Image (tube, rainbow, N blue to C red; front, side):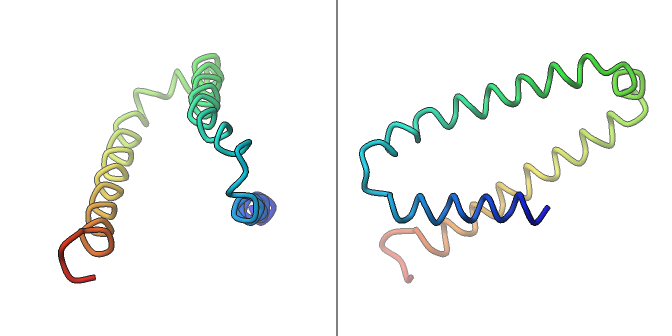
Length: 92
């Protein structure tokens, strides 16, 4: 876990230092495509695992509730951050 977080922070630091390079502007556009490809490969991996597919009926509703609450929490947090920090014309 610490390795993954460390790699992320090193990437943030390098991106911050090199943020004005034109090369990095092109990388931004490919990030979404890379994430979509990773999610697709993850879906293939889950779909081919018979253990997960067989237990989907038993644990699927829990996963759906967890995903729904996670999305709602993220939406609420982003709404609050937007109105507290980025709303124009109001107190900041």
